[in-house]
Image (cartoon, rainbow, N blue to C red; front, side):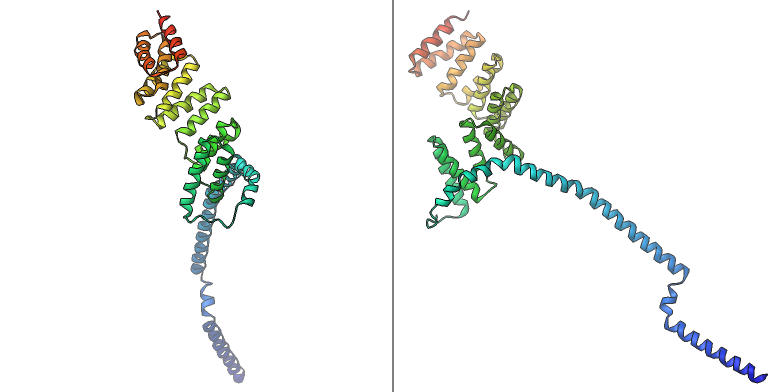
Length: 296
């Protein structure tokens, strides 16, 4: 029996050695089976998962509406603000096709844009609206965001009573925060044509506020109030226009008209004497005199 005991001891020793070898070889893997190690790993993974989910929610909640709004605004902008421009570019295609490619202007792009805008303004002053329009389109062909070109086109549309196109362009300028007093005055004129008196008044006032030293903006307001029988309001702005440009016979006549409508005979007489010395319109002088004399 002793030999059996030795055999068992030898087998046990071999098993122990093999077990020790296996444990030593795979100790890193076996270490992870420790309950504390497993718990720490789970906590770390859970923490990472929570942080990742939180970041995903933040990105989703913050950027999704912005992206949607941006896409929506972009689509609306292209349709509402550039529709007219695109149509006109199509109509103007012949101009680009016939343009002499050999003629090169020896100027920088900025200088060329400035020169072309000046040409367009000059053509508009000469009532050559079609040629002026083509010049503005040429500018937009080089710089689609050129504010001066949009302002010029809006003014052209307004002069030609193309009210939908003018309104669309003026509103585009409002949304780009590049609107000036002329833009608000244009919108006021369009609102009057559309019968929106309240909006017209707000736009005329905004134009005067933006350019308080421009007599024409105050004269526009005075004329607006006269046309709507608010003569007391008209007097304030007519007088202001006269103060800003005292040599203007146009504003002098506006003051006289406003004073007559207000029944202010002394104010009317005071200004009529100056008007009579400057004006060559005898019929107008006689008409004003008769109306002043009729004031009690």
